[in-house]
Image 1 (spheres, helix red, strand yellow):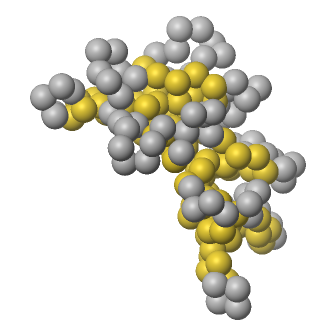
Image 2 (cartoon, rainbow, N blue to C red; image 1 turned 30 degrees about the horizontal axis):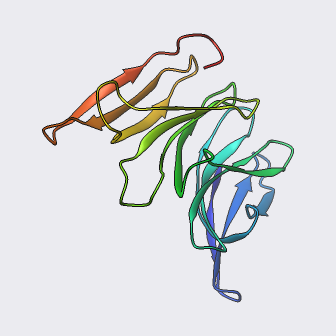
Length: 161
Protein backbone atom coordinates (compact mmCIF):
# COMPACT_ATOMS: atom_id res chain seq x y z
CA UNK A 1 0.00 0.00 0.00
CA UNK A 2 1.20 3.52 -0.76
CA UNK A 3 -0.13 6.87 0.44
CA UNK A 4 0.66 10.18 2.09
CA UNK A 5 0.79 11.50 5.62
CA UNK A 6 1.09 14.97 7.12
CA UNK A 7 4.12 15.78 9.28
CA UNK A 8 2.82 18.30 11.87
CA UNK A 9 6.29 19.07 13.16
CA UNK A 10 7.59 20.25 9.76
CA UNK A 11 4.25 21.10 8.07
CA UNK A 12 4.97 18.89 5.09
CA UNK A 13 3.28 15.99 3.33
CA UNK A 14 5.38 12.85 2.76
CA UNK A 15 4.80 9.70 0.78
CA UNK A 16 4.91 6.27 2.36
CA UNK A 17 5.01 2.61 1.45
CA UNK A 18 3.55 -0.01 3.78
CA UNK A 19 4.77 -3.52 3.03
CA UNK A 20 2.63 -6.64 3.57
CA UNK A 21 4.50 -7.34 6.84
CA UNK A 22 3.56 -3.88 8.18
CA UNK A 23 6.89 -2.13 7.65
CA UNK A 24 6.28 1.59 7.12
CA UNK A 25 8.78 3.36 4.80
CA UNK A 26 8.45 7.14 4.33
CA UNK A 27 9.84 8.76 1.18
CA UNK A 28 10.07 12.09 -0.61
CA UNK A 29 10.82 12.74 -4.29
CA UNK A 30 13.89 14.89 -5.15
CA UNK A 31 13.46 18.65 -4.36
CA UNK A 32 10.11 17.86 -2.73
CA UNK A 33 7.99 20.42 -0.89
CA UNK A 34 4.82 18.31 -0.77
CA UNK A 35 4.24 14.76 -1.90
CA UNK A 36 0.66 15.12 -3.03
CA UNK A 37 0.15 11.53 -3.83
CA UNK A 38 1.68 8.24 -4.56
CA UNK A 39 -1.40 7.27 -6.51
CA UNK A 40 -0.42 4.08 -8.31
CA UNK A 41 1.60 1.01 -7.45
CA UNK A 42 2.29 -1.96 -9.71
CA UNK A 43 2.74 -5.61 -8.63
CA UNK A 44 6.55 -5.21 -8.49
CA UNK A 45 6.19 -2.32 -6.00
CA UNK A 46 7.03 0.57 -8.34
CA UNK A 47 5.04 3.65 -7.29
CA UNK A 48 4.16 6.72 -9.32
CA UNK A 49 2.46 9.94 -8.28
CA UNK A 50 2.82 13.71 -8.07
CA UNK A 51 4.73 16.16 -5.90
CA UNK A 52 5.36 19.88 -5.72
CA UNK A 53 8.99 20.88 -6.08
CA UNK A 54 10.95 23.84 -4.67
CA UNK A 55 9.90 26.00 -7.66
CA UNK A 56 6.22 25.21 -6.87
CA UNK A 57 5.78 23.17 -10.04
CA UNK A 58 3.82 19.95 -9.96
CA UNK A 59 5.88 17.04 -11.20
CA UNK A 60 5.55 13.32 -11.57
CA UNK A 61 7.75 10.84 -9.76
CA UNK A 62 8.64 7.18 -9.87
CA UNK A 63 9.77 5.28 -6.78
CA UNK A 64 11.42 2.11 -7.98
CA UNK A 65 11.08 -1.10 -5.92
CA UNK A 66 14.67 -0.63 -4.72
CA UNK A 67 13.70 2.77 -3.22
CA UNK A 68 15.36 5.03 -5.79
CA UNK A 69 13.27 8.07 -6.68
CA UNK A 70 13.29 9.91 -9.99
CA UNK A 71 11.29 12.72 -11.54
CA UNK A 72 8.90 11.71 -14.35
CA UNK A 73 8.29 14.69 -16.65
CA UNK A 74 8.30 15.11 -20.42
CA UNK A 75 11.10 17.56 -21.25
CA UNK A 76 8.78 20.47 -22.17
CA UNK A 77 6.39 20.15 -19.22
CA UNK A 78 5.57 22.64 -16.48
CA UNK A 79 3.05 20.32 -14.79
CA UNK A 80 2.85 16.57 -15.12
CA UNK A 81 0.40 14.06 -13.72
CA UNK A 82 1.06 10.32 -13.94
CA UNK A 83 -2.22 8.40 -14.03
CA UNK A 84 -1.03 4.81 -13.85
CA UNK A 85 1.79 2.31 -14.06
CA UNK A 86 1.42 -1.16 -15.50
CA UNK A 87 3.23 -4.37 -14.44
CA UNK A 88 6.01 -3.73 -16.99
CA UNK A 89 6.71 -0.31 -15.44
CA UNK A 90 5.25 1.79 -18.27
CA UNK A 91 3.74 5.01 -16.92
CA UNK A 92 0.89 6.90 -18.58
CA UNK A 93 -0.15 10.45 -17.77
CA UNK A 94 -0.78 13.94 -19.01
CA UNK A 95 1.11 17.21 -18.82
CA UNK A 96 0.90 20.90 -19.56
CA UNK A 97 3.57 22.83 -21.43
CA UNK A 98 2.35 26.06 -19.81
CA UNK A 99 0.13 25.40 -16.79
CA UNK A 100 -3.50 26.27 -17.46
CA UNK A 101 -2.61 28.23 -20.62
CA UNK A 102 -1.93 25.29 -22.89
CA UNK A 103 -4.08 22.22 -23.46
CA UNK A 104 -2.86 19.06 -21.75
CA UNK A 105 -1.13 16.37 -23.77
CA UNK A 106 -0.80 12.67 -23.07
CA UNK A 107 2.50 10.97 -22.31
CA UNK A 108 3.86 7.50 -21.99
CA UNK A 109 7.13 6.77 -20.17
CA UNK A 110 8.72 3.46 -21.09
CA UNK A 111 10.59 1.43 -18.44
CA UNK A 112 13.89 2.57 -20.05
CA UNK A 113 12.94 6.25 -19.44
CA UNK A 114 11.99 7.14 -23.03
CA UNK A 115 8.97 9.41 -23.41
CA UNK A 116 6.28 9.37 -26.09
CA UNK A 117 3.87 12.30 -26.08
CA UNK A 118 0.54 12.19 -27.86
CA UNK A 119 -2.71 14.01 -28.54
CA UNK A 120 -5.93 12.46 -29.65
CA UNK A 121 -5.75 12.64 -33.50
CA UNK A 122 -7.25 15.83 -34.90
CA UNK A 123 -7.27 17.72 -31.61
CA UNK A 124 -4.88 20.45 -30.50
CA UNK A 125 -4.22 18.82 -27.15
CA UNK A 126 -6.82 18.49 -24.41
CA UNK A 127 -5.91 14.82 -24.09
CA UNK A 128 -6.36 13.26 -20.66
CA UNK A 129 -5.19 9.65 -20.24
CA UNK A 130 -6.70 8.07 -17.13
CA UNK A 131 -5.49 4.47 -16.99
CA UNK A 132 -3.02 2.02 -18.51
CA UNK A 133 -3.50 -1.74 -18.57
CA UNK A 134 -0.91 -4.58 -18.59
CA UNK A 135 -0.76 -4.62 -22.42
CA UNK A 136 -0.09 -0.85 -22.63
CA UNK A 137 -3.54 0.23 -23.78
CA UNK A 138 -4.42 3.67 -22.43
CA UNK A 139 -7.97 4.81 -21.72
CA UNK A 140 -8.88 8.45 -21.31
CA UNK A 141 -10.80 11.34 -22.75
CA UNK A 142 -10.20 14.36 -24.94
CA UNK A 143 -12.04 17.59 -25.64
CA UNK A 144 -13.16 17.92 -29.25
CA UNK A 145 -13.33 21.15 -31.29
CA UNK A 146 -16.93 21.74 -30.09
CA UNK A 147 -15.87 21.54 -26.44
CA UNK A 148 -17.42 18.10 -25.90
CA UNK A 149 -15.58 15.41 -24.00
CA UNK A 150 -15.12 12.11 -25.81
CA UNK A 151 -13.57 8.83 -24.63
CA UNK A 152 -10.59 7.20 -26.33
CA UNK A 153 -8.57 4.01 -26.20
CA UNK A 154 -4.94 4.24 -27.34
CA UNK A 155 -3.56 0.91 -28.50
CA UNK A 156 0.25 0.72 -28.71
CA UNK A 157 1.74 0.44 -32.18
CA UNK A 158 4.46 -1.89 -30.88
CA UNK A 159 5.11 -3.67 -27.56
CA UNK A 160 7.43 -1.09 -25.94
CA UNK A 161 5.30 1.93 -26.75
